[in-house]
Length: 257
Ligand SMILES: Nc1ncnc2c1ncn2[C@@H]1O[C@H](COP(=O)(O)OP(=O)(O)OP(=O)(O)O)[C@@H](O)[C@H]1O
Image 1 (tube, rainbow, N blue to C red):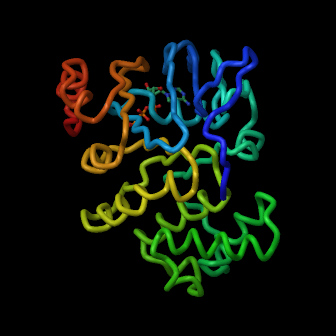
Image 2 (cartoon, rainbow, N blue to C red):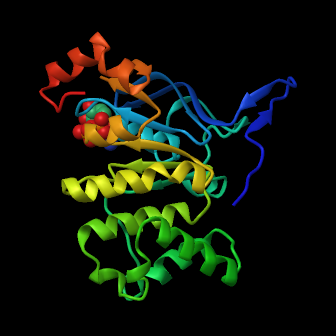
């Protein structure tokens, strides 16, 4: 899985870091401004948290970055202008996401579910088998490989959803609340498994998550939005100490950052 170059040449000849980047990204629904002028940068091989109180615009941002919502502004992947691309086109170019509700292929085994995802992104049968094995191992699912996918307990099912996303060799992987519904022990296991993803699968990860333990423990940087606007970007320590972030969370009654 090597995508050796970690930098791209931009048209001016400058070297820009590989990244999924939005510039001035805005979304409105029937006149309601859900996102306003968001400049977000998810770098190659980093884990960036996207957090904010309820209704801040996190899901809308995820939908825009993956082509599921119309937006204004510019979207760029590794230096290429991908503004307005459809979800399948973005996915083929390496922008992949996991969904809160895992959509498994019922009647197939755990292994087959992952292999099908690998085949779907163009791997040969033998490469898909190897990639599936690797992804299942990364999420501690190998021992369940031959079990029917629909027999999996909830926590395993969520990990299977992520294994299916990473097997497609994303450049950038967007994880929508991967820890939702997990208990503390499962959430800790997930933290360890996700920590290894950027290096092992050679991608950047955007983590949208309410579980602040996971966010603070896992993210290299955090982008905070509130009422559709960016209010802070920084390391976990910087964000935790930021007065605007503290106020946004105190004001919303949500879990504190
Ligand atoms: N399809 C839609 N039509 C109209 N308004 C919408 C639509 N989707 C989202 N919104 C509005 O956009 C704003 C941002 O919502 P969004 O779901 O993106 O927030 P969020 O940060 O993901 O919230 P939560 O943490 O509760 O999931 C909210 O005011 C929401 O009501």
